[in-house]
Length: 341
Image 1 (spheres, rainbow, N blue to C red):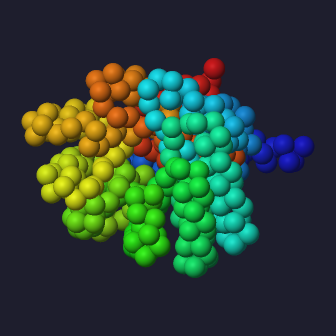
Image 2 (cartoon, one colour):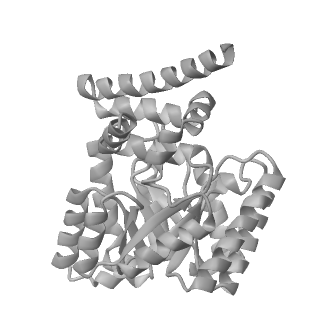
């Protein structure tokens, strides 16, 4: 009886926090909402509550293909049939042991084998902390080497996701080492985040290197001395740097930018710039998350733009799901409304 009462108290605490967060959205600003949700994304007590509460997974499954690689392949096939490409992400991050990092590596290799076996139009995205970046640079480097060797075998590509600012420099160093020293070239790509002040300098460097870049706004909680605190500033930086990555110099050096956003105003601004500068629609692509703005994904594809859908899967879904709630208030309303159905 005591155990049941304790479990109920934890569940009540979690959803009370969500409700208070919603009130904050109206009484203060989206910045506070984002801060609370990003805190919850890393809180073990909140993860334990949510992952043991079946309705939470029911709602999270809107954004996650399922728990197995077969689920991800099935969703990718459906996405391909709509004329869209995919990038698959085996969920997981911040592993503590080399054995866990190796297990993630083997699961991703199996995923690439299935992509090849089923003829899916998909690449793979990986998180450095899932592959051992906190354990040691040699560990994560060796795991990425093995993944890229498998990517060559199965004729796909790997993008290294960018996580919080503590690993930005190390992640960029890994990317360049794999691309240049290990000679994987455009078999490997990198991600940049528009909310970091440093990203403008990173964009300039990667233009010179002709990099394959996924460009997003950023989904981690960062201090104000490192990142724009206001959404409007992040949006302005996103558009400014997107134009730089579409410049004649960038295209001439072989840069291929992928603009990861669901912000329709930003997408239309990029499209207007592309028309104005007479840039080929094959010179870049838009990327969107599975379960978010499917209507816009199909609309852009129908207009002749390349669109790639980011499809996550796996049992470690909680941190990813909470960051999706933090990104868009509409996602939070969807979550809360479904809890009472």
